[in-house]
Length: 391
Image (cartoon, rainbow, N blue to C red; front, side, top):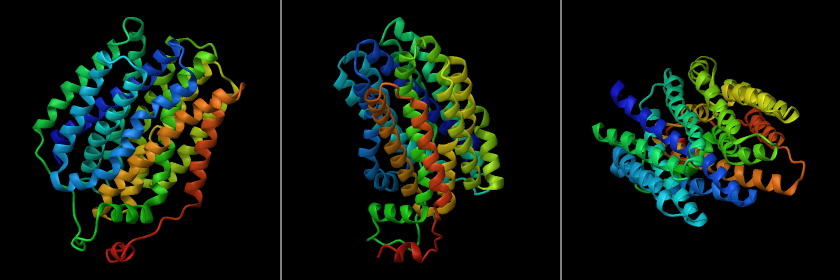
């Protein structure tokens, strides 16, 4: 993979991060201002991740047949059209459908670029390359919430800005030469996508726990926290500063943690950062002032902001090369399951309990993922076993 090729993939994922980082808090603020309930707000935020789940089972076969580039082109076009759709279609449930379409398009783009990077990275450089990939997403995601103040000028303005920037980045896809994922010489015609999903889950299930935990964390923070913050009396402008603090923290430590994972092992680094993140959110729950929350978000971002990319790197270490497309899809599926659960559970929790503390809820989730990694024992594989296990 040339540097220019890698740069384009990094650019694409950074713009995708920007649109996602904008979408969650902007719509949450708009709905809260319009008097929508926390439960509806949380349920609405799941649209993007439901789209990911709906598309996931059908992604691997087109990737093998068409290659990486066509899926990136189709995914980017769906995202751009949907972003501009928010300007013209003013309805809670139409916006839900647009979020769903963005989820489908974003997943096509992410799955293709992510699999492209993982399949062309050596084990010695995998953590570094994926940390750069995650760093680019984090930079975009960190910039997204800065669009929140534009809502005061016009509710349509954040969507216009995001749509135009996404269109500009998407045009670079046409500079790429198409490529195809690796196949195995042991593979037969009877091996289909669902069988490869089963094999990937069998050999790498423990690596999918961090991606689930990160999905929960990301949407709980970006979907439920703005509502929780307003109820604590924190201003919209303060929310627009606090939310990026998490992403900025993840940006600072994304690359160093990738290097550390190459040297000391993915599992060891994941255990360390999950424990640190859980402690940070517990402190934020005990001392809920804007300054303490902002500081805890920043430190937690330095730790658990790399959970998703480290989970992908761990998955790539555990699976044989021909199962990487299925493994990357399962990373996306578990991330989406966590992302759906995050705002729904957070909205329900805040609506059901009067003195609900969102940060304790997040602490328990991160602690559960940490425990799964401690107790989980990944199964080793051999070329023959990957096929005999499902026959």
